Length: 135
Length: 245
Image 1 (cartoon, rainbow over the protein chains, first blue to last red):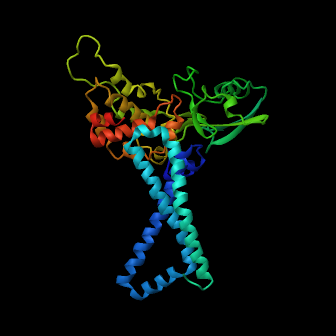
Image 2: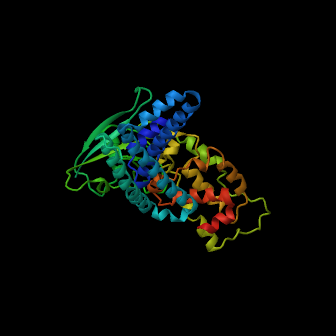
Image 3: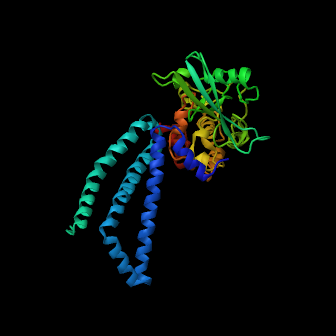
C-alpha cells in the first residue's frame, strides 16, 4: 500500500490533466497558508509572554526582504481561496463536471488577474524599501 | 514503427525492489495494442513476464495498468495513441497499478480493492415481497443509474486517486460508483446502509475532487459526478440529491 510521501511523489509523476495539477497547486498553496497562519499565531503569542521579543520580531517583519516572502504567501492564500471555491462549486453541482477542465483554466485566469497587480504593487514596495524610500 | 518498451519488473522471490527492463520491438503495426506488445515479449523474449489479461477487448478490465504514467487498459491502448509525431521509436513505459500490493511484475493483489467493493453492499437490497415478475423501472429511473452500470471493476479509477495512494483504507472511486448504482436504483431499499458506510472517515469525504478517476476510466464513466451525487445524497438525502442532476 502507499504512504503519504508516495502520494506526493506520484502526484507529481502521474500524467493527470488539469484537475491533477490544480490539486497539487491547492496542496502546496495550502501548506504555505498553514505556514503563514502558524507564524502569525506564534508572533502574536509573543506580545503576551515576551513583549520585548515581540517588538524585535515585528521590526524583522518590517524589513524589505521579509516583504519578499510575503509576495508568494499572498499568492498561495489567493490561489487556495479561488481554487477552493471551484472545488466547492463542483461538489455542490456534480453535473457541472463537464466544465472541470475549463474551470481550472478559469481559476488560473482569475488568480492571475488578482495576483499580478498585487504582486507588482508589493514588489515595487519592496524595491522602494531597499532604496531607503519606504512607501 | 519501433517501440522501446520499458516494463517495471518485480519478482518477490528474487528482487528486493522493482526495477526497469527495456525491450526493443521492431516493425510494430501502429494499430497494435500495448497488450499485443506484452504478449509478444512473453511469447518470444521472456516467458517469465507476468501480467493479467482475459477478454482482451475492454470488457473484463483485468489488464488495467499504468501506461506512460496514466492508468489505462492495455487492450484498449493503441501504440499509435502513444506515438509522438516524427519519432521512429515510440517510448512506452508500463507499470503495475499504484496503491495495491504488487504480486509479480504487472500483477497486483486486488483483494483490498474488492474488500472496499464488498463494504458498500454491492447487490440489490429489497425486503419487500417479490412481485412474482420483474421489478419494473421507468426509462427515466434507469437513466439515473445508467453510468454506474458500465463499471467493469478494473480499478483504473481507484488507483489513479491521490487520496487512495495516501490512504488505502479509503473505499475509492470504484466502490462509490457501485454504491451510487444501487443508492439511486428505484428498486433498492438499502440506500441508508450504504450511505452510512460512505459517510465514515474512509468514505466519500476523502474525495478531493481531483478528477483523475474520471480521466482514467476506460468506460467513460463520469466518476467524479457520481461521487459528488453520493456526497449530496449523504448531506441532503437521496431524493433531493437526485433532483440536483
